[in-house]
Each structure stands twice: as C-alpha cells, then as structure tokens.
Length: 83
Image 1 (cartoon, rainbow, N blue to C red):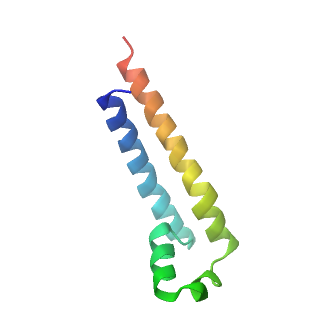
Image 2 (tube, rainbow, N blue to C red):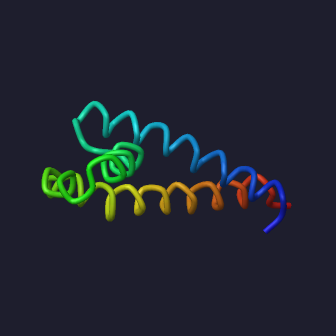
C-alpha cells in the first residue's frame, strides 16, 4: 500500500466520519465525543441514560461504516493507480 493509497483512504474515512457525525447529530444519536465527555463527567449515571440506538450506533453502525469507507478509499486508490 503506497502513500497515495493511504492518503486516499484517509480522506475517504475523514469524509465519511464527518457525514456520519452530522447524521448522528440530526438523528439525536450520541456520538463518540458526547459519549466520552458524558461518561467522564457523570460516570455510571450517564450510562443509564444511553439508549439501545446509541449503543448500536457507537459499536456497530459507525465502525462498520468507517470500515466500508476505508475499503472504498482503498478500492478507489487501486482504480486510479492502475497501469
């Protein structure tokens, strides 16, 4: 994996993360920043207020989406680097 491939993949993940964070905010779902700041400020009390949607988003949907974005970035870089 060359530098251009890593760069392209990184950009794809960055763009996906921004879009996913905007979507989570619009849907009222807790993102990683809100989760970690709430946890550090309130501890276990904060955990009792987290919904199943928040857990599903944080631990399944978000990582899967970023992984797919990384895969797409890698595939795109391979496409443009084909000789």
